Amino acid sequence: MHLNISQQMKMSQQMKLAPRMIQSMEILQLNMMALNERIEQELVENVTLDLVDKDRDNPSDAPDEVIKSDDPKEARELEKDVEQRELVAEGEGNNESDFERLLEISSEWPEDNVGFGGAAPSANQISDSSDRQHDAMANMTARPQSLHEYLLEQFAFNSIDDTLRQFGEYLIQHLDHNGRVQSLLPEICQQFNRVYDQHVTNEQAEEVLQMIQQLDPPGVGARDHSEMLLLQITDNMPFHEVMRVLVRDHLEDIAYNRLPVIQKATGYSLDMIKVGIEQVQTLNPYPGRGFEQRPVQRVTPDLALERDDKGAYVVRLLDEYVPELRISPRYIKMLKNHPTPETREWIKKKIESARWLIESIEQRYSTVKKVAQEIIDHQTEFLDKGPEHIAPLKMQQIADRVGVHVTTVSRAVDEKWIQTPRGLFPLKRFFGGGTQTSDGEEVAWDTIRIKLQELIDEEDKSKPLSDDALVEALAKHGLKLARRTITKYRKQMGIPSSRQRREY
Image (cartoon, rainbow, N blue to C red; front, side, top):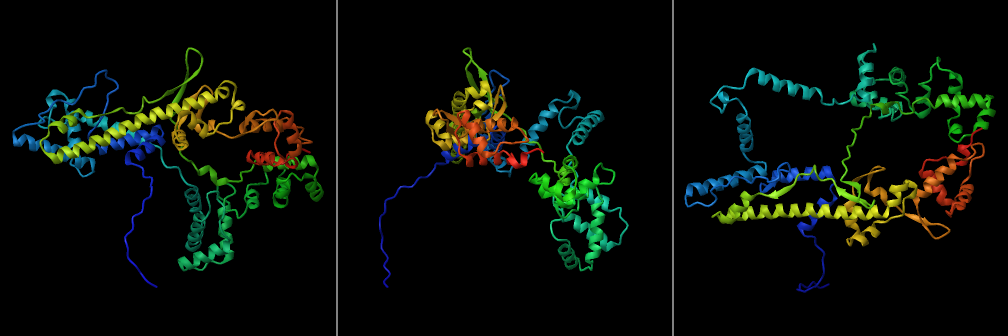
């Protein structure tokens, strides 16, 4: 085997995205709230960016300063100012911005208290400020109590020895978010003895578990679904004996609607069984879920629909809450006149970065508006007549009409919401596949699902429609679909089979 070292020239093509293009794609994908956060971040990092005051017709520029000077002292002061702003942008600066804000606040004090040589703010002013801070803290949303904290608080009132109390607290911490025991009790007991060097028997563990099962909410500490329901049935409930029999022995029969099987095994009448099932359905299969309080996600629409003089829908951007940016005139002057090459090069890079950001935001507005307008033009019947009239639409169709790549359309509609006369919708809601009817007309899947739901709602519950019967019923409406397709959509919609839908 011979090893040779040689030099060869090879020509190949590689696709590399410029930083400017990457930034443009990132900005395009942001929704309204995320764009605001990005702008705030850029304002901190890039001192050459300025906010445009939308409340003023003629926004005032920064006051003119001595940018170029033959005085070395003044020139050095300008260099220090740039260096300090750069450090602030990188998170290593001094308290210059805090000092300026403090001066602004001091200018609002009474004349006899102006500056740092005057008297301090009055006690009433300090008291008012403290009251506002106290009110703000009082109005903050407190962290909700978790299920485990709620159970531990109740379990503390049991009179038991320290070892069993410690095991009970350990067991509570090992309940899942529904309040159910996640592992076999002997395994949990064995693990506790090994970790804490204790000796809790399986019998003692069972006694502690029974204490936990008496806590609120009813059903916690269960080891399976059946036990969770049984723990909630009390003797003062109507038909409690029937409920216990149904939960203990016939949960699977109830799930598959096998009421005659239950009737034969128990001797109860069908009416009694149906009443018992209704009572069982009032129980809570997930007693711990009431403690899961997820924060409500606030949705801010990026777009809104308006009608023009001809009655057509016109898309309007909702950008009044997005800060408008510009490049600081002060730094433009410094770029032109500052004598130090290093400072000029630093300002030049910052201004170029600011210009890219402003252009990316403007390009985002233009692309999102064009894409949204094409979507709305395609889904006019949906807006006029309702969801059952939505038309099949793919992102590639919109990309061809706008003249962009399909990935651009995907980024443009991602997490973007539009306010319409029929409510607030994500732009992705207007996309979906479809099929052809017997007449060759394209029909969206949403239309098929709506028609399928209508047929099932109107069926005779004593003789519900099978999937084959649903195929025939849809065919009468011009929707020819395979049986497996009907079964697929029925399951996706959470609709039981015909046997499970039957009412006796």
